[in-house]
Length: 372
Image (cartoon, rainbow, N blue to C red; front, top):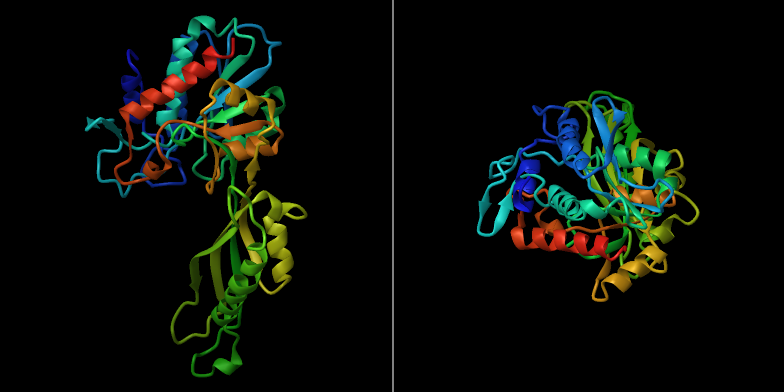
């Protein structure tokens, strides 16, 4: 690509919708992204490995040229995007208007990816000789369950000192984020004719009682914890289902919930463990996915370097979770950083301002320059 803008447009024009998102898109979009990135990275002298995590869904690992015995850090955006069904613009055109580049992923996270790639291209002639090896790692599956970063953390985290996950943070260093628990609560009853409800057991009524208790008692319990940046944990009941017909006492009911966690909440148990202890056996928990909170110490040597390199740099937290949390949970000091705003992520007319994209490339270029 002959310009930063053209690079981002090219990335947007490669559909890489997460396979768990909208139907009708190729489940190999992440693979196509990885294949498109490979020659660009190889032209910088990097060794590219496509490490399959799930069938036809790889992580891309590009190793910096030069000595293998140097300390290693990584720049790590993700390959996938959310779905496009509600978009009001062409999601894959990469159109430009009013100083903005539009398209799915423009903000989350192909904009940060382009900024990282352009900075690496700018310094391609120096990558082999830097005292620190800078690898580029693009994760699959971030928008749903993060299997890519979970896999990478398990197998490679020990090889690195520091990671910058590419996310639209307005170039602020996000060093702490909330974790997340998704789980399904289920109750079972006994079906009978609605004219004789006393002969059955109403699963919906039981579930409503448990959900009320969840909000009033468990919600109060977790809200006792607080974090100076992230605030308090939160609880949301997102869906509820049950029964088959109005004239049948329902024998099943379920609800999906979302709990956002902070580090101090999980000092003795996971969020799932806390929930399991609270309900004991009154409900069944299933389809559970838990992502940890992240809090990289501000005293970490790499965060201290960032403060030294960029004295005016803002350090903050975020209520969302990302690949960085899984890396940090495996012992790899990690932060999120990139151009663009999270306010534009996943929107119907997703965009990134060109001036912000350029500022992002300048930031990563300055970061690499200061590693000498």
